[in-house]
Image (cartoon, helix red, strand yellow):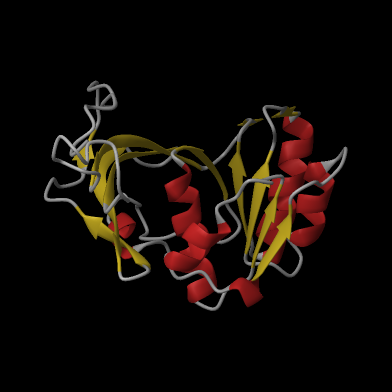
Length: 213
């Protein structure tokens, strides 16, 4: 099992990312950065493919260990092949598809390799048939920018509120709210008061108004 931010663990059926699985991640990039930070901070090795604008500084502020992080911003014509190779030796491989779709037959071959190597594949920015779990994060609100008339719209964000939804083959879709807070050069994940709620037929919440602008 690969670790995730503690505030996110309660949303996942097994409290982390299952080794040998494929997870689709979409929405706010803070979620992806949190996963990368948690795995490297826990001693795991991570490769990130096809994310030239990855917020490495933000990941470090969340606790990421750069010596355990490999970046391949431009994987060339076949990023899926690079991901398949890196599954041998990495604990987590993040694959940015750049809007592309992967053929089901090829996806199955890569999944089989991930299982045999005990590595986890996170897919973003594209379609991957057969992902065991899908995580989506939406910005629910901000806090920390100037509240006064002279400071309105100025300053640095102190916190970001995310609505995170998890969907999977073996569990009912569920959602929760998490706060990502910055303090003294560190970024922490904090569970919001709302409990994890099964979605059922309730739609995933839309973003709400920005707070503190």
